[in-house]
Image (spheres, rainbow, N blue to C red):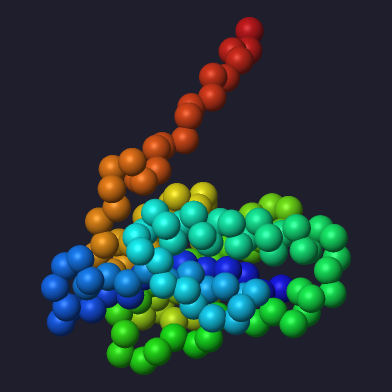
Length: 141
């Protein structure tokens, strides 16, 4: 099944804020869509993942026609994560120095933080994931 993804590309030759480009792979259209901001890209990739998940649940035959994101462009400083849109969401990541997809253990916010760090994009504090809440353990007598 094709998965939506979020890619951040860093262009050193450009001046801020255009030195980072946020793109979302839309498997429904078979193309990357440029997003105005990181937050807009996160929202879009999650909405597409939900649509693909609904297609998967309903066993929509159109899933077989969806394409995955293309191979990365050489010489581009990028980082990307994709969402497996099945019942249990999981994430894969890749970047310019490791272009093959690898499984990422964690939450979407952690995957986003990871790819952001790969290209030097600083996330707004509200987007940095909080540490998991600690669960109280029952004491044995």
